[in-house]
Length: 411
Image (cartoon, rainbow, N blue to C red; front, side, top):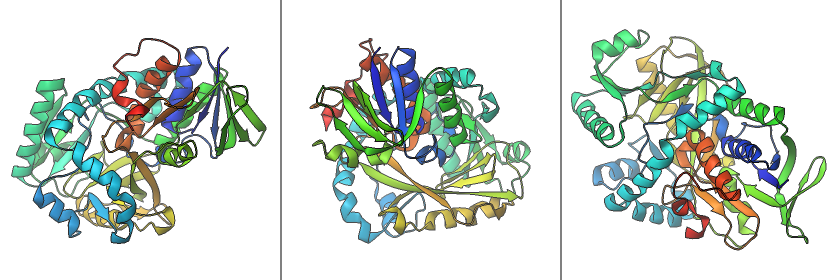
């Protein structure tokens, strides 16, 4: 039986472990924390079948001016932190040109299209249906002009990819969400996405499934990964050294740091995000996206979770949730939030590649070393899909889609 170490027990790593396990691999999953407690815990809980186009870097002057002057809330930066981001950001800018973004989106759509169905299999096998709602979400627009622009984009997605949505006016939004104090001009009801009431809990449910069918999870230090003299790989765990024929690096934003010691340089854009729960106030039936203010408000097991946009910042010790504070102020005008559940907001980092495509495939210079990271804002959505793709590559099976655009060798 072939053996593999999977480093990282977030959605990406756990889904990879499950797909390899199905193909007859003996899998040890290694993380310093229990499954689903890092980046996979902190998102808005969407499984996004409508997100056929990855997020490009803005190129129009008005949007960039809003970011530069601090007026925009979807992206925030600190001048002192910009030097560490400038290289990846320049590449991101280059890949975000309209024609390049169009080509990238065609590739991206191939994996997004399978996101719900791949999750569906794992949700059913893990017995996690209680965590999932299959009713979509609302994207609120305050002005008719903004709603009309969003409607046009929705029509394009429907024509090109069959994405289902419905335009609802202010009265219809108010009827669907009686807890809202303001309904703007209306909303786009994206009908196909699924939403999860406990994202970390879903990862934990998948990890429990992995263990039930024979997988092993251990606490360990990914930084100790090293090749063995026999051609395999080893890592130190709390239970001692773990050896295997192959290793998968699925450490999200920490992946480039580990791979640097093996001679690989990945220009990742690290986008910090924040969330906080609120309880004791009004209710929402579906998550609400507020694009003007750059946040999502989602009903979760712990209360209403507000998640922020992207912050280009330094290490976690410098975290300062300005965007989340602005989002809370905007959200309080829309709904009675109640009181904060946590004393301090949660923060985590989204691992975004400059070409907006995840890294999935073999290490170019090391036999048996595989890479699986860089999913940006959609790791929760795409984990089972790209986990399947990597498992097919590792097992010598024909991949369900062309894997070359995702290859680590492109860097």
